[in-house]
Image (tube, rainbow over all chains, first blue to last red; front, side):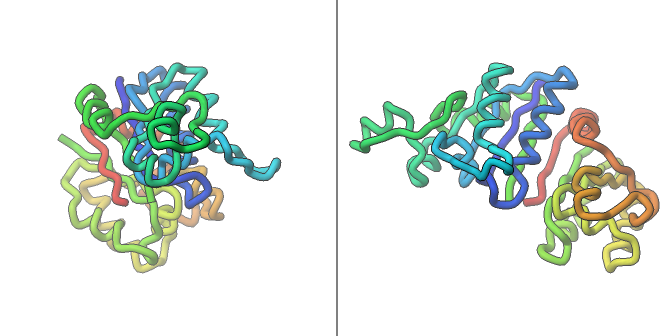
Length: 130
Length: 102
């Protein structure tokens, strides 16, 4: 079955990003297809490559990147939510005149249409948030 | 058409479980996750509403979250079933849609 995932909460806030990660992993293990993982609202904070959590803590951004690259997941960050929170790829950094970008490998920035499309294409849409 | 409802906050923190229970249709399922698992403890103010819901709906608890909070199977309102993340995925597949009460 095709599943789409929405993540509305940042890492280390409560537990939503962890739950979404575990759920996505379990769905892949069960043989389901992940149509898209859409990061919205504070969820876009999962996509910065500049996080440095303590060594004995989980590194959520890295775990998302590893899961995404291993399974070829389409991990989309909402552009409007990302710009508000300073999540930029190289193109956006240039366009906005910023001196750096910070998006992590495996994520791409796009619009809210990608969430609507995921809802249409997938058999189930599951939201994780605060 | 049946719906899987997920609740992720304690009912003592937010009214999301109460809202969820008020919207249940026969055949629906409720899955308590994250701090939502607090509601599963037997003897609390939420035991009766959950027992009432289980007359025509199923109630599940995500076991990694209940274990992390020290709630064992014997501490829960009777009739509540536990699932792991794989079971969570199966519930999403089994029901026609998922409603997250955020």
